[in-house]
Length: 502
Length: 99
Image 1 (cartoon, rainbow over the protein chains, first blue to last red):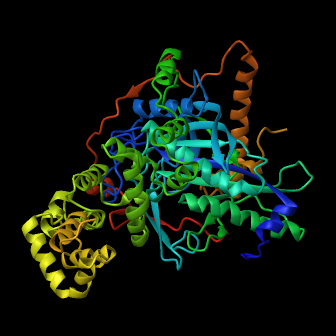
Image 2 (cartoon, chains in turn purple, cyan; image 1 turned 180 degrees about the vertical axis):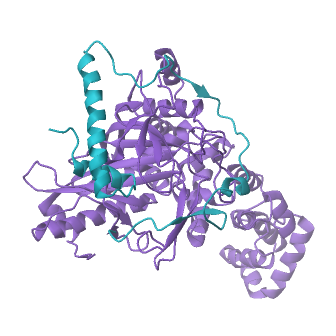
Image 3 (cartoon, rainbow over the protein chains, first blue to last red; image 1 turned 180 degrees about the horizontal axis):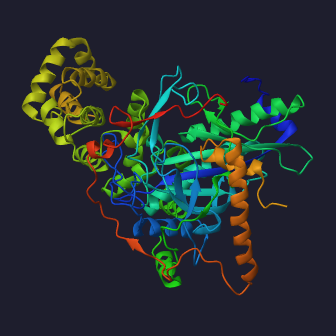
């Protein structure tokens, strides 16, 4: 197997070719139990502890569909402006691969539950409509670990070991139609689409959509056509794209790779490629089986799904406010600029700020802490903002302490540090670290006495009317109190002590 | 002309991971041809006003509530596995030389 790593610089590639992209997104539903059996769906359990005769395909076991999963899929379809099928079936997708113990996956084939929708995304101030081809329901597969190879990949492995905890978790597949005309924005459009889709899933409450845990996974299709032509080129499908940034990188990288091949007169092979987080490059995966090789047929063990129009309308009427509408409303309520909104969106801070505002914090403060100190901490530790071990309620408490004068911003930062370090609630951290502002007059007076003695020159200057010199003395008090003094009160007391008034 | 070729039978056998000898391929190709012919006769009878059916029972929307039920223990789950490693099912190499 030879791999050519030639790439054409992005600008040149875009000057010669036009990209067409498509995205297939898999969302694990956040149901309590699996799609066709009562095993739990929680992440991270010891291997093969969430399995039963149904999801292990033991003889005689029969599946029964989870009503919540059907409902969630219809709600997703409605939120994506799809038509909901009045009647459809599950289908067996037959393939010989040990990630499913049945040797088939229950999926949907020619009768998806939801079809023909769209999702509008905003990129670079422009609205791009992404057409949705279909939304269907299937079951997730088990997790294989490949052993004995040098790379941990399936190629070259001696054998594999399989954990079926994930096998049978309800999985919704959302497939876009090919997206044309995005031109050089193709990578950003792909990222914006997945970001918006994730927001939508969150607002519907159907999934925790954590890309790093695989509850949101994305396959990226890219093809190129020479400028001035209209026939789409051969596409590749890049899998293993596990972060929003990677979606963007995968499209970017695949455009550069395909352009180089086409420019040399080469041919793109229709294949599955694997994305590598570390390098941003893709390598060829297994050659794709043809759809007919899956020998799809209607699943005989499950009865057809026929949602009544009344039920569908009821679900439609209960849909939450769409994320785009909600963002616009909150932007107006918070009085935030487009630029600041974009910054919050990019930092994935929007829902956190919103939750903090809901916890009673003024919008400006919520934004200040999440986009400032907390963003910095998240950056330092390389974690996502949402994964910081702090709750909006805890931030609300810190902000309340600042508002009441018990903390200043500097001390508040130390409280946040303590909470993040697992030292307890804000009040416990304040108590344990002794972080309350020193406004006790007696304690403050004795600190001021020390500072005035140690800085006699500055004190004299203030006495002689150079009030500006008081800054150095206040600074001294803050330093001596390790930031805990109430600076305003200290200033008043110093001036009073030196017999000066402003 | 037969409805299924020997090559197609060989392809289906490969998809099902069945190792069939040459004589078996001939044998099954002939048998499958008869089966397909029988199905074709049904298709001739089925006119447009007869919808295709996949299920014998006139039922739809049979669901269960989203409730967690007791699972097997890992010991029970793995009891019949031909090979086990680290509480996981151990399976032979998945991709052969072709990859």
